[in-house]
Image 1 (cartoon, rainbow over the protein chains, first blue to last red):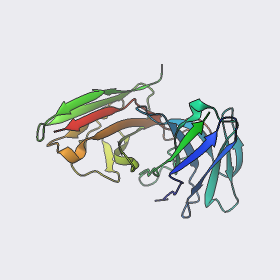
Image 2 (cartoon, one colour):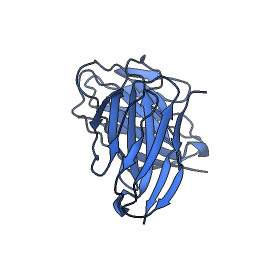
Image 3 (tube, chains in turn cyan, brown):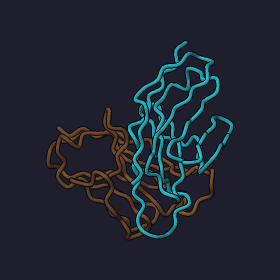
Amino acid sequence: LAKTTQPISMDSYEGQEVNITCSHNNIATNDYITWYQQFPSQGPRFIIQGYKTKVTNEVASLFIPADRKSSTLSLPRVSLSDTAVYYCLVGDIVQYSGAGSYQLTFGKGTKLSVIP
Amino acid sequence: EAQVTQNPRYLITVTGKKLTVTCSQNMNHEYMSWYRQDPGLGLRQIYYSMNVEVTDKGDVPEGYKVSRKEKRNFPLILESPSPNQTSLYFCASSPIYGREGEQPQHFGDGTRLSIL
């Protein structure tokens, strides 16, 4: 199982760009990288997913180097409402190969605090 | 509306009294999973199911049971709850043949269990 390591917490001022890096040294060839956001007392919700290079959507960008041993979630111009815990997950269900099991292991997450 | 529904949302009970937390999804997803979330430990997978009658252990299965008799339902059973199972529980579902970039796992709103 691919294990992930993230910083425990980060602080940022409103309006700044925030980059959260996740290490996943033993990522498998078929594994995708997915980031989730979680607010207190709510279930995690999907932010972005990628396999390699760069992916961008309306809320974030995901940078994945060629060796895929890490990934960086980039949140442009954060606001107070971006204060949350961010989880990196390697090997999410999409693109399941159909063989074997699919146990998922989330990391401990990064608590982002946005300061006014 | 696509959703994962958990019941109850809150429960306080006593040691040894069997309880069941229900989970239902309306998206015809094959994959369903239960997680527990504890401070400082992030999300840990308890059990998962790839389809009807197919279940397997996650990272922390001890003290829990699950069943998958229908595709939409995946109840979590605590036969003899103990205080160390006091936690916030999340159910999630996902298609196993999704498309890249689409939302993988959909999470419920959580069930807060307190075992006295």
